[in-house]
Amino acid sequence: MPPALPPLAIRADGATFRYAGADRPAFRDLEFALSPGEVLLVVGPSGSGKSTLARAIAGLVPGDFPGDWQGRLEVGDADVSLADRGGSTGHLPVGIVFQDPASQMVMDRVDDDVAFGLENRRWTRAEMLQRVPEALAAAGLPGFEERRTNELSGGEQQRLAIAGALAPDPGVLVLDEPTANLDPDGTRVVFDRLASLRARRRCTIVLIEHRVELAWPLADTVLALDRDGGPIDIGSQDTVLARSGERMAKAGIWLPGDDAGSAAGSDTAASEGPAAGSGGAIGSLHGVRFGFDPTEPVLRDIDLVVAPGDRVALVGPNGSGKTTLLRLALGLLRPTAGVVRLGGRDPARTRGSELARLAGYVVQDPELGFIADTVAEEVEAGLDAAEAAHARELAARLGLALERFGDRSPYRLSGGEQRRLGLVTALARRPHLLALDEPTYGQDRRGHDALVAALDELLEGGSAMLAATHDERFVRDATRRRIELADGWIVGDGAVSSGRAA
Figure 1 (cartoon, rainbow, N blue to C red):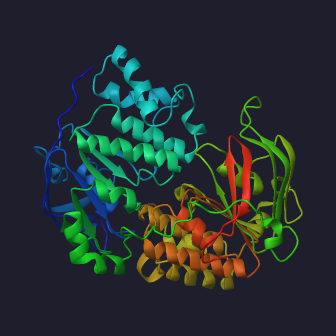
Figure 2: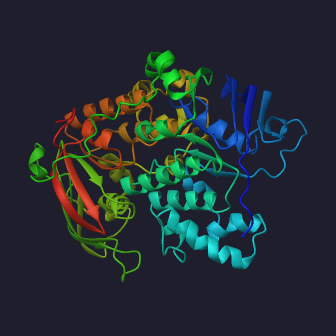
Figure 3: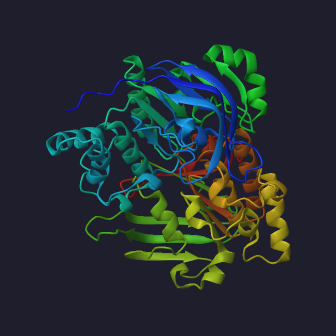
């Protein structure tokens, strides 16, 4: 196989980048020097420029989005800030995992997707045939070579993106929220691999991650950004915590210790079931089976009733059927067997205008749900005057005040901001059933707390929630009932033993 590429140094000297037309830089005045093989952990609230910095280090900014540089940002011998000044960054040996893994899927088959990057680096066919299954197995996808990329779950897509980034043995590895859609086992696999790379100083790593309990110990250097993209502090873990911990917490940054109350040991022995609600069923699935391929069911014999006031967390490994269950409950998929009811009707046969009043849906990739050119238009689309006023108020509470964000494109928001915008549009009509798919993806501390408060208000009014999630903090804070899926079966159904919502 080709020799592994050597790790590279990364240096920022007053690095500042502003997108064209933006009212402020995405990030500004960055000063740091990372030696080859070291790990830089970048933390900051949603919208602080973390993802833009990740793309800049990979040589992808400005790329499709024009902008202006000040200062310098060097990766090895290449100055990536020259990209918009007639310079060239060359072929940077950088592997990157984007915040949205689906955006970097380029081939129809899993093995071809991993091989794509190797082929671009001129690996031979024999070398690729050996390396692709190794990379997939290391990312937790053994035997997935012939699977279709568009049939993978969100977590499986994230594992595939990681496999593709690691396969060529890059000199620099940039990871933007790499475990946001992963189950606990997948998360452990990723962090074990990163710990191994760090121990061998195998490549230089830039990591953006809200799961600080796992990420913080890996860091040689921590860069903390404020809400406007400026540096709060940079230095070693202990130095940054001691010097700026209070300021970081006020900015909404998760810090080590914030996960101490996680409900990883939630009690699922005794079910509250539908009795947790205060009335008849809002939604139900009885004897439901479903499979994209009839010979390989995704869900098997699902029985679930959701009543007013229910707060249900759907948990389980990647690929266990959580997202599929949400789509069936909303009528977006038809079961191959069994009965689905929403508001007493078959949702798959209910008119779209009626369905929009009954249910709200925040999808795993919020960009797929956007229909307007600006945030303001997205927030108010299809609403009457009272609903639009409610939506504007929700946007402000969730950190998306239209005075600041109204004229922006939804596609130019950070991942966390896009997730909250999707929640605003789903909550605006006060739906009877709210379905959430990984609702806390990319959320800082403030975003998490605002999300939980908004859900409390809706659910106390008699609506119900189904949330597919791997975030035990969210399970603890926002849900009362925990349903565990595995291989398409419900294997656990019980009460969450602790949490704000209990």
